[in-house]
Length: 177
Ligand code: ADP
Image (cartoon, rainbow, N blue to C red; front, side, top):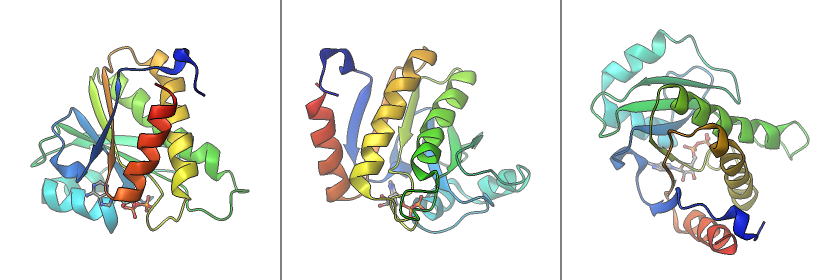
């Protein structure tokens, strides 16, 4: 992983609450209903206001690994990209591929809408119990592999809500810079 070819100035790390990010799109770690939940999903719905839920109701859910886009309403971000991460069941049920599909589909959807900046939470690492180090490695790999296909995107921010996640990303990004 630590070859100069992996250097990418488009990747950024930030500690804090994704609902405060002023970017074109923040990514929501949603569930298949897209009707809100706990964790980052609940925080995004609270900050965006009830108009977000109203738009989500019209989307008729989302499959695991896929992504759908809405407006951001009262958020500083213009759009929310809702993706559904896999629940961790030990790693033999396609969890890794599905997690990478979340990052890939979110980026491709952002590019389809000509967006330039996108912020991701650590998808699946909360209630869905994905091991945080493995999730971060897979996230970075998926983003790096997809960026060549998304030329409008100039900033990808990994937003870490807790210190452990931040340290993991810091180490992985440092290894590759
Ligand atoms: P999942 O169901 O995909 O596991 P969670 O929301 O439970 O989703 O957790 C995903 C990650 O989002 C966790 O690392 C959690 O700490 C983080 N998180 C929770 N709230 C926020 C927030 N407001 N901003 C950014 N990340 C958050």
